[in-house]
Length: 467
Image (cartoon, rainbow, N blue to C red; front, top):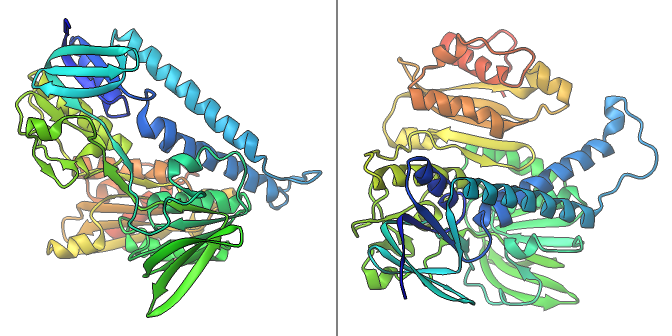
C-alpha cells in the first residue's frame, strides 16, 4: 500500500484538530485530518453547540412566559415544542459542521473518514469500511478527545440510563430526570430540562460545581432549588434499579439509605481521555492513567508526535483544545512556542451563568498570596435591572498592594461573555486600577466589572451594597 505524503497528519477533527489543521495550512503545510465520525468532534456535534442551542430555546420560552412583566401581552398558551427544539438544535449543528468542512476544503486540507492508528512515528494507517490508507507525515498531532465517563454503579447499563450523547438524541421530553453528578455538564442539563417542565433531581458524591468559585457555587445551589430542582450532594451511590416504570437511583447519605426516581437517568460524571485504537501502548507514549503526557510545547515523549485537547485530561474545554492545537502546530513547523495557561476561562451555561478565570480564593490562599476580594452585585447594575436579570455578582481577586488581578469570577447575566475582560486583564498583567480607569460603555453589563474593579482600587462605591 503506497502511503500518501503530508507535512502534518491530525488524528481527530474536533475543535482542537480542525483548528490545528487550519493553522498548519495557513503556515504553508500540507495537511490531512483523520476523523472516525463527523467533523466537529464532541463540542460541535454532541456538546457545546447543541446544548447552547437548547439553552437559547429555554431562554426564549421563559421570556415568553414572563412577557407580562415587561409589558408584553401574549395571547394563548405558551408551551415548549420539544420536537422543534431538537430539530433546531440539529439544524444549527449541521450548518456549523458544513461551514467547518468548507473552511477546511478552502485551506486544501484532506479529510479521511476512519480510525487512525499510528503504526510508527511518521506513519498513520486509516481504517474505514471501504478499506485502509496509509499516510506518511513529518509530524503527527493526536486530537482524539474524550468520551463520557461511566461510574462504577450497578445498573448503568439499564435502558433509560443515558450519557449526554444519548440525551441529546431524545425525541420526547421526559417527565422526570435524575442527573448523577453535580458537575458543569450535569447542572447545565438540569437548568435546560427544568425550564422545559421536566422534574429534575441532581445527585452527586462530593462537591457541587467543584471547579467553580465556591462562593458563587454556594449562591447558585439555592437558586436552583427555588426553581424546583432537587439537589443532594455528599452521598455514596449504591445502584440503579427499575421501579414501577421508572428508574430508581439508590444512595446512602449520613448512614441512611435513600433514593430518587426518574423516567430517565443522565450520567454526568465527567469524561475520560480517548485513545482506543490509536496505538499509544505499542508506541511507548508516556501516559498518566488514561491521559497522554506532553510538555509545554505539546510534545509527547516520542519525537514528532504531539497531543492536544481532552486526550491530555487537563483543561477539558473546546477553547483550550483549539489553543493547544495552534501551539502544537507552530512547534511542529519550527516556530518554538510554549503553552501559557495563566488565563484559561471556564464558562458554565447554567441559569444564571457562571464564568471564571485565574485563581480562586482557595488557590490564592494555598499559594500564600496576600490578596483582597472586590465585589459588585448585578442588583446595582442599571442594565441588569432593565433586563430583569439582577441575580449574581462580579468578584475580582487581586493582590494586596499592587492591585494585580489574580482571578475574576462572575455569576449573572451574560457572565460567559463578560469574562473575556478578566481573561485579558490576567493575560496582560493588569491591575484593578487599570480596569477601573478604563471607560466602559453605559448602560452595559460590563460596568459591573468596572465597578468591582473600582471597589478594589478605590474602596466601595457609595451605591455598592455588600451581599
